[in-house]
Image (tube, rainbow, N blue to C red; front, side):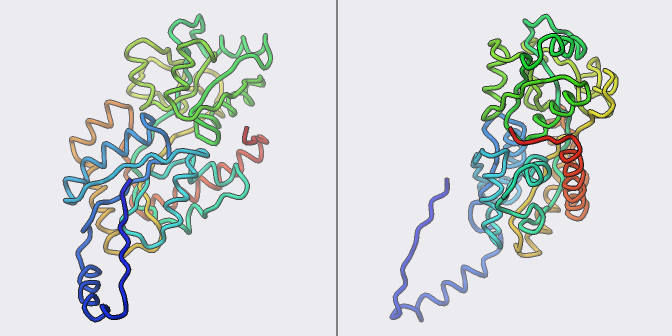
Length: 326
């Protein structure tokens, strides 16, 4: 974490230090390191995307990008840190479906407004959730998993990286559409959830593709279905939930770049330009493709509109399905 040094300026020195203060205020942005808040634990999708882009921006902007993991409450803890820094052009975050689409309508007393308290700069990437089991499991299809859940109500568990995440809600949608009971086990991040899956402590896992893809390619986990309307190019042999017989289970994870509300317009425009250039670069496209992420194409206006629409969509889904936070 970045340290802050506090200086006490006495009245007798005001005339001496005032020009220095004015000079500091006039310094071109960025003139010091930038804090990048990742509101999920290390090794998850948000962390992977953030560190990939932070390295790029650090070179382009000529200042270090200090990535800080601030997980908790389905991404809302880290989001609140950014929301409470209005006008600060030196703090940014990776906003997500969890912190800015689902959490604000799933939970009561969320401490920030997901639209008004932020400036949403650019959609970074999208990808599906994947239902998976351990490679040691005898289950090889969604049907087999659900048949087991019908035979043993409440005994079939599925893990996710936390309450209020897209993976949590995708599992709930599947259970309700199938008419079965799937017991959700929330973890503090993806890594412990995947460890418990492979260790046999849970039956299944709903996980983000970028986090799990290495486990699929190495054969340690077996994917059963993906949550988007079409198959993922990274998992061409894995069916969608629609193809498995559940047309209502269609979800997309999304992550974007956001800052506190009230930052200077020229800084916001610079960020939008830099992020757009990064996502169009061959280097970033290649890195994203390896983890199953489609680069975002929405700038500030489009990304803000997406967040508004997702808040409305999830409010309707959560109300209709009577989904509650665990």
